[in-house]
Length: 428
Ligand code: KE4
Figure (cartoon, rainbow, N blue to C red):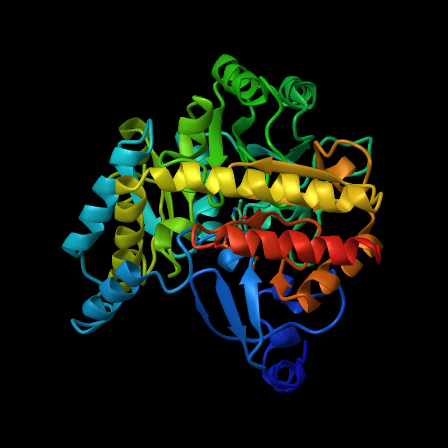
C-alpha cells in the first residue's frame, strides 16, 4: 500500500493541529507509523487519500453500525440542513428522537441530549452526585468514559484506595473523589464501598468493556453490582456509549437484563454526527435544570442535523432487528476464521467477542480486566496491525480498542480479512 498523500497531509496537519489529529488515538502512537488520511467512505469500505480501498473495522469507533454513508441518514441530514443548521431553540425532532430512544431502551423515562460521550458521562456523574448528595464515584481501571477530569484517573499506589491523576491538569482534589476498582472483580467494589461508607454517589462502568479491547462482563458481575448498589444507596451508571443500540436495540440493559439507574449514550445514537445523551427514570432526570437544581447545558445540544442523523439511524435499527442477528453471525464467523488462521501458524493469542464487538489479544491468558489486557504482546500487535493494513484491512490502531463490525460487511469481506490474517500470521 502507498501512503504518500497521507504522509504529506499528516506533515501539514502537524503544523496546525497538536499531533496532526483532533483525537490522540488516531495518531497511530500505539502502533507506530503515520496515520492514514481518509477521503471518503461507503458501506464497509474506506477510501484513503492515496486511493487505497480498505475494509473498515473501526466504523468511526462505533457509530457506523449500518455502514458508511447510509443513505437514509445522508438524506435526512441533507433535507434538514436546507432548513438551517442550528437555532438554539427547541425543535420537534428532538422530541421525536427522545421518544424513540425511550421506547427502545429499558428503564428510562427521560433523556437529555449533549454533544459527545464525554459530555454524557460527565453530566451523568454530576447528576448522580446531585441526586445522592455524595461526592465519590467508583470506576474501573481500563474503562474509558471520555476525557472529563473525574475519569482521567489511574490506580493510586497499592496503599491508597483513591486514584491519582493520569493526566496533567487533573487536580489531586478531583482524583481523590474517584475510586478505582478492578473490572469483573466484585470484591474490589465491595471493599471500596466499605472503606468509603455512605460517601459514594455512583458506580460507573462499561457493561461490556471496549477500551481494554473487548471484555465482556463475567457471569454475575453486572447482577452483583446491581445488588451492591441497591444495598448501599449507590446509583449504577451504565456507560453505553459503545454498547448502546449496538448490542441490541435496548443495549446492554436489554441484552443482560440488568437495569442501570442512569445510562449514557454516544456514537450510534448520533448516526455519525456529534451526539451524546444520558437517560434515567423521572425521579432522577427531574433533578436536572431547568426542572431541578443540577445544572447542565449546551449551545448545540439537540442540534437539528445531529438529531436528524440519529433519528434516521435509530428508526432503521428499531425496524430491522435482524441487523443484530446478522452482525452477531458475521462477528462469530470472523472470530472462527481468525482463530483458525492464527492457530495454523501457532500464534499465541486469545480473542474476546460479544455481539459485534471483538478484539484480538496476543497473550495466552484469558483477558478479563486491564491487567490481563496489558499482558498482550504489543510488538506482535503492531506487526499484526500494519500487516493487515498492508493487506487492505483497517483495524483499530491500538491493542486496547475493540473492533466494531458494521452490517455492510459481506462474507467476501470477512473471508478477505481471514485470508489477510493467514498471510500475516506467518510473519508474527
Ligand atoms: P466521546 O467523547 O469520544 O464521544 O465518547 C467518550 C467515550 C465514553 N464512553 C465510552 C465507553 C467510550 O468508548 C468513549 C469514546 N471511545 C473512544 C474509542 N475507544 C473514542 C475514540 C477517540 O477517543 O477518538
